[in-house]
Amino acid sequence: AVAVDHDAPAIGARRQSTVSNWTLFPAYNANASPDDESLTKPLLVAGQCTVELRQSHPIPFRVIAYNEKDGENKACIMLEVTGKYASIVFKKESNGLMNQKELARTKQPGAVLQTRGIAHCAYWFSISDDHKFIKYGIGELREKLKQTEYKVEDVEQDEDLFRLMDSVDRVRLLLLDPDSSSENFVSENVLSMQDMWRVHLFPVVGDPPAMIADHDSVTMEMVDAEAVTVAENLPAACRRLYYNVCGKKFVVNDASFPNFTQAIEESIRDPNGWCYKILQDKATEFGPERDEKGTYLRITLGQNHANSPGIPFVMEIWPPGHYSPVHNHGYSHAIIRVLHGEIKVSLYPFLSPSCTTPFEEVRFKKGDITYLTEGVNQTHRLLNESKDTTCITIQCYQYGDEDNVHYEFFDYVSGTEIHAFDPNSDETFSNFKKLMKKEYYKRHAED
Image (cartoon, rainbow, N blue to C red; front, side, top):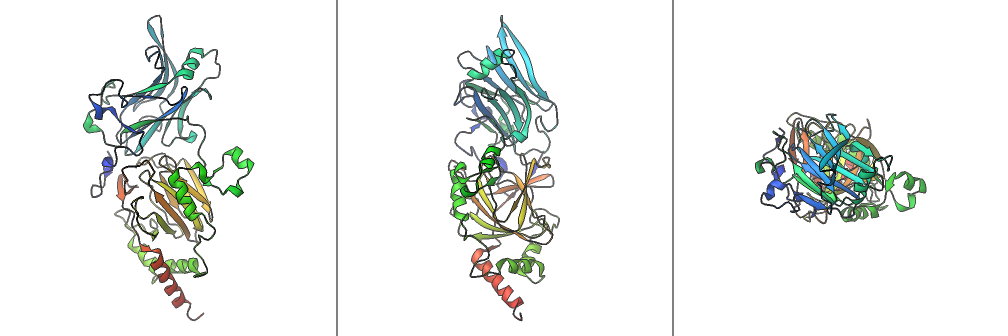
C-alpha cells in the first residue's frame, strides 16, 4: 500500500471526473443495466479507438471490443490484465463453440497489473483498422509506453480478425475480483473517485513531441520527423498560457535591471544572500530529511484567479545541481519556458513510488518551450545538471476547459509515500526584483 499525506486533502477524493467524458468504474453504479455507459461505450468512429483506464488501486480487468450488431458472443477482441500477465485474445463463434486465439501476451513485471506501491496508474488498449494493429500500454498514450502489440501482416490469413477490426464499434469494461479472477463488480469500498475510464477517438500512433516551436522556425524535416509541435496543436488552456509568455520581451534581464540574472546567481552563492537563506530554509520541504539540492525558488507573477492550481505564473529558480521530486500537476495544463540556463526534464509513465525509471529525458536550453496537458508530460522531474549556471524558467498553469473540479495541489513522491504539495510562493516578482536590486547594488557599491 502507498502511504498518503493525510494532512492534505485525500488524493482519492480528488475528482469525479477530470474531463466530461470520464466515467466512474461500475461499482459506483451497482444497479446499472448492461447497457449503462459505466459498463459499455460506443466508438466515435468504427474500427479505431483507444480505451484508457485510470486506477488508484490494482484491479484486474478486461476490455472487450466488438461489433454491436453482431454482439460480443459472435466475435470480439479482448484485453485481459492481471497481476501475472497481460493478454490480447481474439474470440470467434463457430458451430456453436467459441474459439479463442491468443494474439499477444506479456509477463514482464512492468507490463502487468501494477500491484506494488501504486497510486496513480493508467492502462490503455488501442485498435486501428487503418494501421492493422492492436496495442496495449501502461502510462501515457504514446508508442514508447506500449507493452505488447499484434499486427495483422496477412489480411487473408487473419481475415476474420481484420473484418472485426474494421467493424468494431463498441467496447465493454469488466472488473475482475482480485481474489477469484471472476467477472464481478469490485467492492465499492476498494474504489476511489480516481478509478475511471474513457474512450478516445484516435489510436495510439507515435509519440507527442516535447518541444513547442515558433511557426517561423518549423522546417519540412521537423514536420516529417514529428520532432516539434506548434501552439495551435495544443489544448486551449495551453495556447492561452503560451501566448502570454512566448514574446521576445518576456525576459529576465531588461532595461530596468540588466544584471538581474547575475544578481540571482550571486545571491544564491552568498551565505548572506536572500536566495541562499530561503533555499536553506526549504531543505526539508519535500521530505523529513534535509536535502539541500532538492529545492528551488518559486517567484510568483500576478494573482490567483481561481483558474489554476495556485498562482498561474511562477518564475522558478534552479541553482546548479538542484532538482524537484517526481511529481504531477493534478491533470492541469502547463507551459514551461527556459529563460536562463538549461534544465533536464525526466518524464515518467505515472506517479508511484515504484515507478522510478523515466521513459524519456529531454534537455531544454534558453528560449525552449515545452508543455503539459491533462494526459501528456504530466508526471516529471526537473534537474539543473549544470555545475556553475543557475537555470530560470517560467512555469504557467491552468485548468482545462472541461475540468470542473480544480484540484489545487501537485502530488509528489517522497520515499515510499505520495504527498500533496500546495503551490506556494517564496516571494512576489516585484518584491523579489527589488530585493535583488538592493543586494546587487550594495554588493557592487565599490565597483
